[in-house]
Image (tube, rainbow, N blue to C red; front, side, top):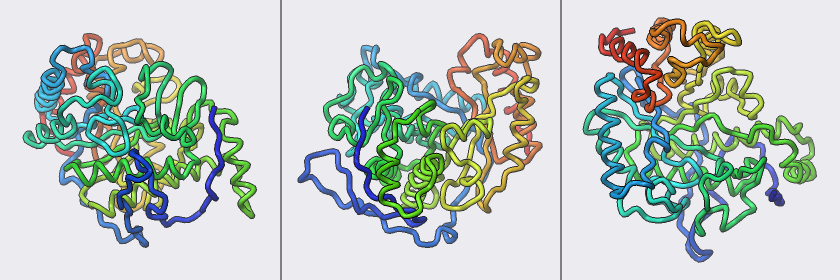
Length: 405
């Protein structure tokens, strides 16, 4: 476990604007990536999509080509197949995982190449996968949201080995080890700078339609891994927050930083988060979803993963949805709903997914009836899973009817 001296904590709504620059190359390799802070986020006008978002998540596992003989051809074929299936289902947004482990599916100044492209993290595949994705998708009028896991470095044995130019290998002080996995330290200012610069890089270089963070924030069951961080913060602060407030504020600072970075560059790129669907579960990850929904300056959209059946004994889909509908939302926030295609036809949620084969299409109908701005299906692999086949066929039939809200 790694601990470090935290830079004095600043409780300010205004982004510091890149005063401490993290660069993945040598100490002499400096680039000016400073972003001018947006002093009044209420003045930001975000260009929203003109139609309902009908999305599907495409995971890094789906795109893994490390065991293919012709890796570039295999990757491009995967993307072509995804796009063809999306068109068949009348889906218009691909949420594609391009940074799963502080690595990248594109040439980056800050992160090494992902191991899923070649089998070795840091090895150049010889082409730009993200450019391939965006070019092919836009040719078919499909929007692309770059899906990033902001903190995760590794989980157990994935990736099997970090590259020599990985930011955590170069500077272990920015990360921590918790329960056998490694993460960027949410309290570390250099880590926040790294995350922010990585997002800026994508928005500046690529014609993405959105940036999305998933539901992983503080590591689950993290114990007291950040006690040194918190003690240093308390020693430097006259009226310190509680540990729980400290952790929530660290995540808030990161989101504010990224939000300002995105909109200092473009206002037609949406920044969103897809948190856990049970609103209370987010508290365990120190994700203050109610604040992000209610106050401008954090996110442009939220897509809770309401991964429950209509009759789930623990929490039904409709009850979970209602919690999000009842939450305060700032003017301009879009509400998309995460739909669990992967559960269809399985014995999940006490077997209630086996009751019918039109549960997914019914959930989609409910989100439209309730006035939500769209949905995202998890995940694309469900389109080719025999357990999910009947449900997915019904979803495609329902969507092809082009029922307007």
